[in-house]
Image 1: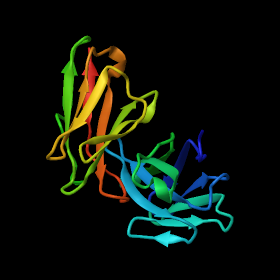
Image 2 (image 1 turned 135 degrees about the vertical axis):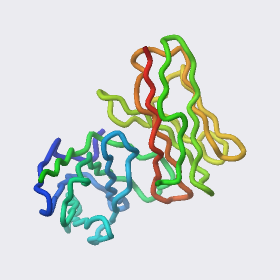
Image 3 (image 1 turned 90 degrees about the vertical axis):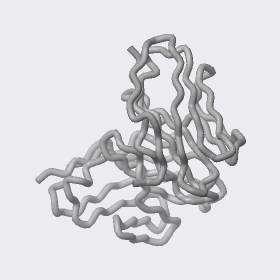
Image 4 (image 1 turned 120 degrees about the horizontal axis):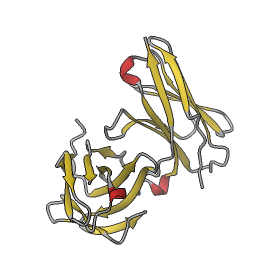
Length: 112
Length: 111
């Protein structure tokens, strides 16, 4: 019962912005959008999350459409170290103390 | 460094054997989660413990078991190992409704 749809893979040139899309057309009003990434064989790492407003932190920006049916994770200046699998996960606020369920994610390849 | 420690980093064993993977959560984190990652299955949630009690089960086989001790560290026991159990095993922890922090994993190879 996949709640999100992401492209299998994307390429990005070093120094350019990487824009990773995620479709979550069945999202409910109380569900947040989370992004994690996994650099090769390392443990997944939290990036950012949001409900309906755009969010920005030191790692990335999260743009959520007004209807909340899709979102985009933006890495403003991608580096080679940003090469990883990026996971978009939708989860309700009342599930915050439960396990994250990961899909297949998007493999982002950053090249020089 | 996430603050979550997993040992050992690598483990090589034979089919039919039993192994124990260990996880020390971040200081103060009451929840521990175990995940399995194989090439064909991706990241699969196995089991969650909260303050010593089992809270949720995912796709955990009956040959696998886990526990969380009073000092909050956790162990994942894998028995009657099969070739298909070869995978990366991750532990994660958090407190309350915080984001998850993952360890660097244990690579299990069953030969």
